[in-house]
Amino acid sequence: MEGNGGDAANVVGPVAKWRNDFSRAFQYYLDRSTPHPMQRWLGTLAVAAIYVLRVFYAQGFYIVSYGLGIYILNLLIGFLSPKVDPELEVLDGASLPTKGSDEFKPFIRRLPEFKFWYAITKAFCVAFLMTFFSIFDVPVFWPILLCYWIVLFVLTMKRQIMHMMKYKYVPFSLGKQRYGKKKSDTSSSGLMRD
Image (cartoon, rainbow, N blue to C red; front, side, top):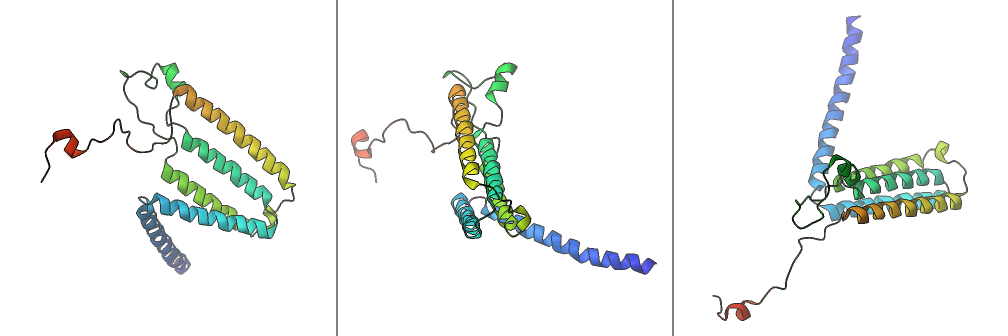
């Protein structure tokens, strides 16, 4: 009887080791991709294009695409929303700065860009895998789903933009703000530099 328990431990040991090694390697490459957002998003765009081609040529899996669209819309709301909701801060007495004398609070996202990218990429990969199982190919009239998703997107974005305008925050930064034109060295000092 003791030999049977030892065999199970021998089988589980290599599987656990392989899983641990794969997890470490995956995390290593994920960490290395962090400072390269353009390449990450181009990779996600390629994955999305492969998924769209798969759905187009399969002529089905519209319900999977609809679910994927709803999930991405949910992620987008998290990406555009502040970590601390200004509506709740007003009730607590704290609020976003509205005057020049108020304390500056930087915009911190509820869903950071890296997690947003990772979740979207995983979603496209899972949706792509789902297209290989006929159980997920539910027959639906796809134009109705598309129209419903567009209406949902427009209403949700309208509400989010109104929230941004009401509490005066912008979820995007285009770099450091510049206040004046740079003066040339010769016109400002009259002396030439070495």
